[in-house]
Image (cartoon, rainbow, N blue to C red):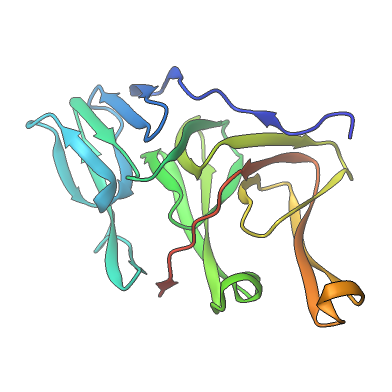
Length: 231
């Protein structure tokens, strides 16, 4: 491979409309976000580490978003400034930003987004079969974030370290099903199964891959953690 996946930086500062941010820490990183009052951020409620007292927290949308994580409810909530708020996933890993230009989208494995600027549209879909091949589950969710008329920023948490591969049109890469964390909306994904018919597997084993086809970017995490979820 002439252009293998590249390791993303572990500490970053940046800004987007209505906010600025800083990512600090190597083992369990923390995302600090300063809101000027014109742009909220939204997130799963349990990832907040601390906040300024004047900063307001509430449900996002009508009733917010609700899913289950290991049998417990997860609500999608929103913070409005001005003020500062900090987020952490309570797991060793890698926190990093994705800046989405207007009109672009990204798809993310469930429960791995840390926070998103309020101008990003959000939806999700359930994917069946992939998790079933790995951990005996019926599937998992994929979150989709889309920037409308303005740039937005999305912060993700990857387990272990995160690498990024930029695929040219028609270029492909096979990733272990637990290894990918995000892909551009322009990147196609399909499941590929290779049978192992010799040696110690005795014809009973299979190797499952997710095959990604460009153009666009794919994020790969070096460690995989799966929490049982349900609608």
